Length: 265
Length: 337
Ligand SMILES: Cc1cc2nc3c(=O)[nH]c(=O)nc-3n(C[C@H](O)[C@H](O)[C@H](O)COP(=O)(O)OP(=O)(O)OC[C@H]3O[C@@H](n4cnc5c(N)ncnc54)[C@H](O)[C@@H]3O)c2cc1C
Ligand SMILES: Nc1ncnc2c1ncn2[C@@H]1O[C@H](COP(=O)(O)O)[C@@H](O)[C@H]1O
Image (cartoon, rainbow over all chains, first blue to last red; front, side, top):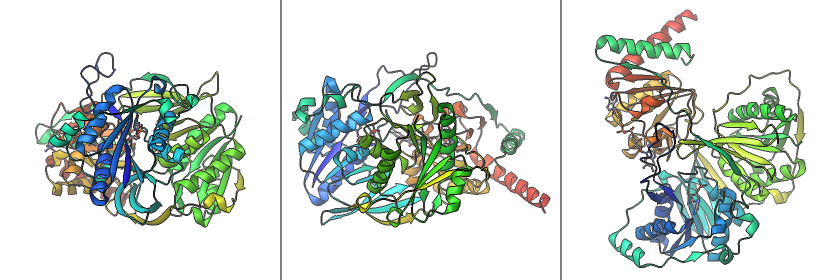
């Protein structure tokens, strides 16, 4: 199997701090990591390779420092990486990003699967996976939670939907986006880290992938961000502290009041 | 000016109520643009009463594509049907719910139409000078809000977070136009096969549709204690949610997880019990209309976003609350006979 895994480097958000005065995100000292939800895609690819053999190629579109993300994926067990980097890519929205990734995937050539994360934790759209499938005219399973079988050029998967799961069968090559339930990502190994460190990651630009100038970067993006602002996070709700039996009953009374007044009961 | 379109989701033989929320959203946009609002409904066995319901909920027109081959959602065929409709009628705006279907179908379509799409919007408006759609959505785990527009391509597309608006009450006197469409074989050809649907029995009430969610965190201490959460949820006709810690420990399955790497919900009431309110959890529930938090740590982050916070031990509070709700319900039931 030849599997391509698009991964994105994102700011580490687990300890995002908001500046209480300005209400903006404190960016100093914020590390960049592999989009946490892409780790499930990487793990899924590695397990498929372990079962069926083959090769995993990670691709990432981003600035040069995104090489770190690619190297981390290689340290986990992926075979090769390609960085898609070009000033002309700057400002790409999900349409343009999907286009660049689709072009790069075509350039890579033969493959059986493209496995994406469900969404990136910064942009938080989840549109790039379906976008790639659309550009490449490939079958697509989003929110994939389990791979049931791969045989005779077909893949059968389970996808997590609102009231349960759907099982679908697709012809390969196909595109998957995966949810956390599909796997537990492994940690990079020491050997993997050494391999990644030594590896030279090729950088492909717009010309190399044959991307049309009017479909990439800000110019190629149909959407425009007009305004960014900080939501009011605090509701400044009331707080009741339970100290003894009396305050315990008061607290429960207050919850009941609230439920009744808001017609929630 | 082209129409405003909403996607009405038809699944397992019925309309998803989120379709009515979209109509309410779409209606205010259509009014500002002085155009009509239409719903597109595709599926199999779509009944006249379903179509009438869409009209009663605000649709001026309903485009209906019914076919056995559309019984189940397959992105390629659904997309082709909608693309044919978009090409024929050229609506100005096309919105769908940010459900698993909407979030799969819309990006697939937007690429084919070479137009922009904004995900998971919580606010939609019209820019007065240009008539462009202003699409506001949370990003970076809800830490910021961004307003986005699609100035040069059409349709302007967005997915809308479920429960971010209320549906309009039905008005049976409303009249609307119904347009039945049929398509040739080419539209339906696909190699993808829908095998089956497996209902998740642990989700008595689907979390993303629930009006009330009672969610438990690590503060519950052990899996058995989740019974308290389940009982409370049941009494309130709500669904059960969980923090990631709880899912990682196996106290609850992944479909219940709320947050950055789980589901995003926006119910009328969210009760967070023994949940600290880590930014990744808050990212998935902060747009809830009412939030009640129970936590023994007075400095827990969850209190920052709660309308009502109770600082105390859940083991004391929950049983008492459950008892009180039962009493209340009994009393109400007696009053009603
Ligand atoms: C990439 C990434 C993605 C993530 N995605 C998610 C996600 O989707 N969803 C999610 O929830 N988390 C997510 N997390 C994890 C998140 O950072 C927190 O670790 C998690 O939400 C904590 O869960 P918790 O609140 O149940 O546990 P804790 O943080 O341990 O909080 C337990 C709380 O219970 C209280 N408590 C204890 N005993 C009692 C008692 N007897 N009575 C009352 N209160 C009590 C404590 O005061 C404490 O505040 C993610 C993290 C990362 C890095
Ligand atoms: N710049 C990028 N480079 C590589 N893959 C990406 C990039 N952006 C998004 N992806 C992939 O698309 C998925 C969804 O991202 P998004 O649509 O931005 O939420 C991610 O989980 C990645 O697998």
